[in-house]
Image (tube, rainbow, N blue to C red; front, top):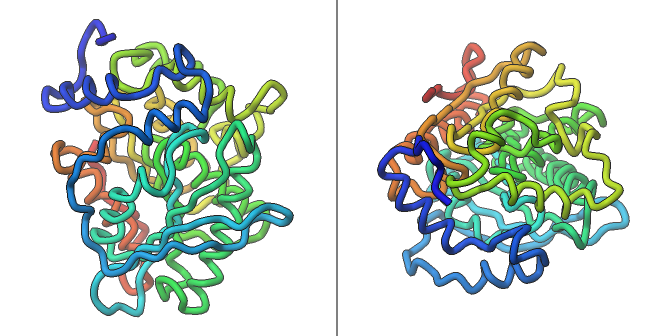
Length: 332
């Protein structure tokens, strides 16, 4: 259903309608996660060539103690370069759907535009593996990437390890940063949070104003949280809802939010709380955009500018480019 008062930019509305028509009715006619994944897998390919990068490698890395190894996809930029950031990227999908393939183009664009090595992580999905499985996977991936960066096996700059993700992956990115602080490492230079999932409470004003009509719905989010937490999960735990965590001594952040998104308010509130805790933050707020817009830079000018800001924030983490504390641009 279209929102009563359409606040999307005109170029975004046809895209939102098409995405909404193709997306599973999660929590409605579709309640099984495996069925939701089958529906998404059957969506026809766009047929477009993937954005070029220098090299792509699928491999596995160690998971948490007692857990399976983690599949990852490593993207390396074109050309030679000794000092590059290493971005550990977590895909969105409500902790329940999506994977390396659905976010391949986004990882490639981030690699190419930021001149960074990107490690895209296939963390365990709910409901088969509920909280805190994905969070522990995220931290394990960070530990591996930081060790590899320090040994010269990835970006070559051990001081430029970045946590990044969109939606639930944005939540995992900041949870990995929280775990690194709480567990005495490894060091994180920057957290890039793209319309992140940060609070199981689902009670912000944007959950009401953007409940439907803008692709991601409040009903979708209820279903996602049910899958992730299960009947006995603790949604107040800071590793489930980092908006409720103590935020002192966290790395700088660049946070992207969309005005027509149920998650808008928690992303903006997280930015404000980080600043209050003394953490450097830049924001890219896009009032007329929707959840997921960054994935469409070929169609949306604001997606191109948001991606450029993210890439610049990542690039600035390299030791010879660091300056007086800037961590990226501000588009809002």
